[in-house]
Image (cartoon, rainbow, N blue to C red):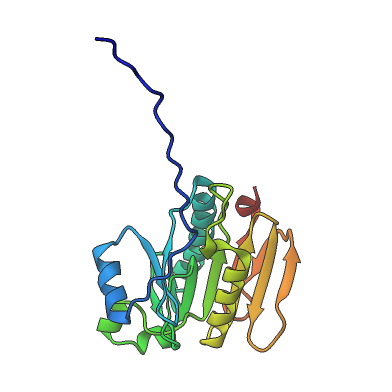
Length: 210
């Protein structure tokens, strides 16, 4: 018997950039608790956002930012609490957000109940950082597109944030968000000041730009 072999066929699947899935606040909390390794967010309209894992470069940059903020928080513990990218906040508009780094004044933190401190923090931080991550492929994640991140920064301000930094390593560009003023844009700065929100805090951007 003569056996005939055919070349295997290659199947190409076109996966959409995003699939809209709406969940309630309770459903979001259940999903987050059941999937602690996933980076989940939820818009004020209830749309679920699943952020992909970071690549090596983005992870290293995020660590530098968090470590510098953490060191300042340790030496200025009386001023407030700092948080990493795993912390979830419920904004006044109902959105569930997890900034890459954030800080909350001591007065606002201590006004929360013990139960509120253990769960998703039910308010917007005073200070937030969003880091635009490096592309893992030719297609950029929708959640890390510049317009999406800019909209998120405006949302933070509208919900009570007093200072926000959008850090874009791809273009070595910083957007500084403050209450009731135009967004300030800096190109390739060496450092950033925490101003009067985080007095004495200076973020060294050397490791972020390299």
